[in-house]
Length: 74
Image (cartoon, rainbow, N blue to C red; front, side, top):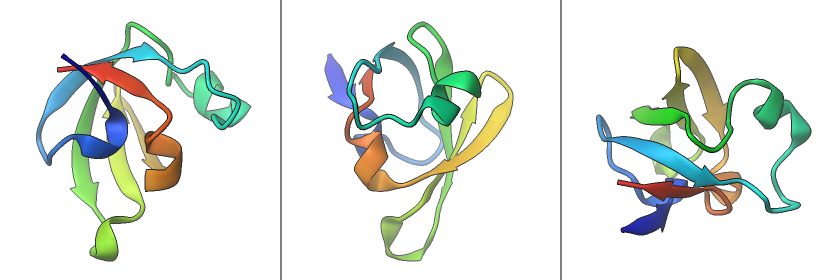
């Protein structure tokens, strides 16, 4: 089932399938936000933005708006 990164729950682990959107900053790609990498939601800030993620051992905080453009497979 394909979904977006914005819809995962805390502690859930998924695999990134596509990040081809123009809305994804290059910096995220350089930090490991690439297809085939595993991602886990560690924590969500108050009001659900930003999201604190673990992507293959790298901890990142991204906005929910950006996460909506990253496709995952649960």
